[in-house]
Length: 285
Image 1 (tube, rainbow, N blue to C red):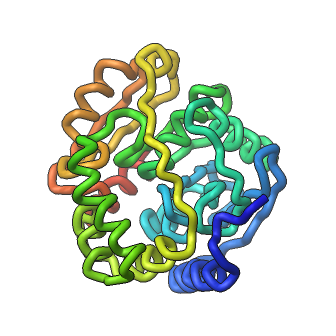
Image 2 (cartoon, one colour; image 1 turned 90 degrees about the horizontal axis):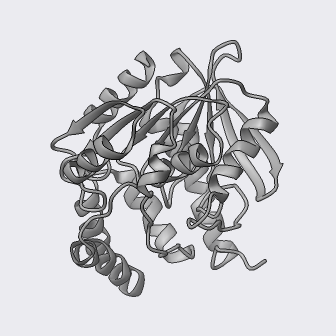
């Protein structure tokens, strides 16, 4: 299978930043790699094994260390399993799954079953939210509760706004390698400046074949089949998955919506203050 990394040099540069971020976190952890039906999956595990399990799923163009940095205190209550999502710029296999079926959900259950976890809680940001919802659509029986932060798969934003504020700056950076275009991209999506994101994405955009498949939205009848408690965090200034639109639709289609929170001043990627609020609710859940 052809690699999604455009060169070995590019892979090395991206994964060096992965390792750098993991080292900066200064956490006790272990790597686990398991063979699933969909490819080798890399997992970073941290926390006491006697505590309840929580599976953490990062967003697109991300990796497990970024997920740990986003919610750094979850190990106070949980043993945390942060997955490197397949076909993303990280250490898992590069097999790209379909968003049209429940393949991502089957993959997560494969991971959970091989880890022999019971009564699992799931938490995910953006594309990680889509993966979690696909997990529930495939099988809810071993999932205790889920937490979704600015998730994909519920609503989509205005495609023209996304085109001009997100995709055109990204493409211009990829073509010209001028950081001003990357900074424009980050400014549209990030609530606060993130120097690591600037370094990491500057490499990812140049060296990794990203997936530009349109994000689908969950069907009403699918959403109504979900009985697992959902806590939803919507971002008021999110141009990708607009917060007000998300809360309005979620309240109508999810019978198991336990709590919904509007982060009014947040863009798609939350700042430290809003991530602390999310983390507090996960710890209290």
